[in-house]
Length: 127
Image: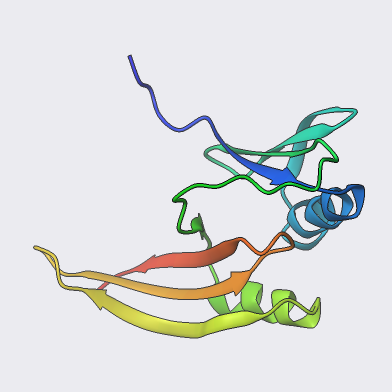
């Protein structure tokens, strides 16, 4: 029986990518380490985990993952930190209305992470 999402895994092709990814998610975003082994780490992001591992093969995996979205209390503050650290923001913070029933209001922004992954910072808002 499925209970929920346990983790999302990111594969690094080099030791440099591995260290850069750890610095981004732990030092910059403030996620905490759950466990670490010689070529991997499991990081807690609140209601799930991010696994980052390096096999040193220099090969990226293929897949259809579009982006990772993290809930936050302040999209603008996180984006300022990301920009200051030198990461590219490709959608600036903006308010959106998702035309569902009922309508859904949020503030969001996107950046590229240390491995080129698309990361969304998302805050649900009252109408």
